[in-house]
Image 1 (tube, one colour):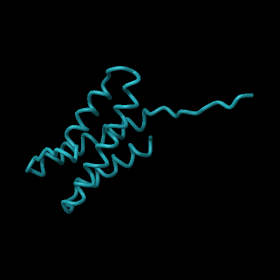
Image 2 (cartoon, one colour):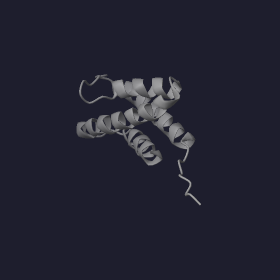
Image 3 (spheres, one colour):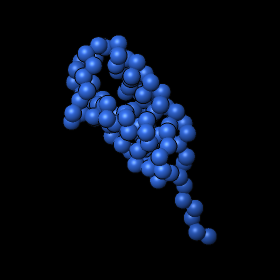
Length: 102
């Protein structure tokens, strides 16, 4: 999962540039998937900061019923904040290793 979070963060940082509209549609799909994965993984721990924040991210970036903010400046701030959240989540992600039976 750590790599998915890093990919989402990288794509969000790339979105700060002026790119074609197709990229932003692709971005919505990938970020929504990443946010839903975080919500599902963190749901095991109950409601916490990650569930709430990434639930909101999944709603804002959903590709089915998109939210349009017609100013690029608004999206730049949102993209940067969400990218930082994905980076923090990837850095705090615990590595799950299964111990082999002896």
